[in-house]
Length: 67
Image (cartoon, rainbow, N blue to C red):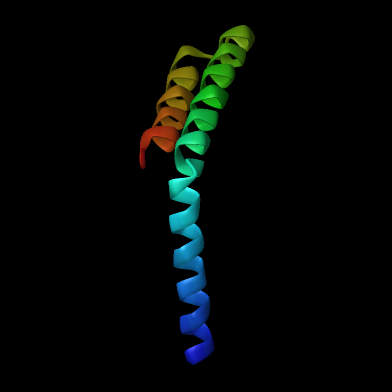
């Protein structure tokens, strides 16, 4: 159990360091950029309107759900 605790503490320390360095903000912006690019490609292939809207809603939800 002690080894697990050390590992948990190390993970928490690393997560805190990454947060301080802006990793979360960077990754969120990267996800939004991919979302924008994906929507542009979706418009090019012109899928069925209902399917395209479902993909847009799902993609938007996945990117924004924990921001």
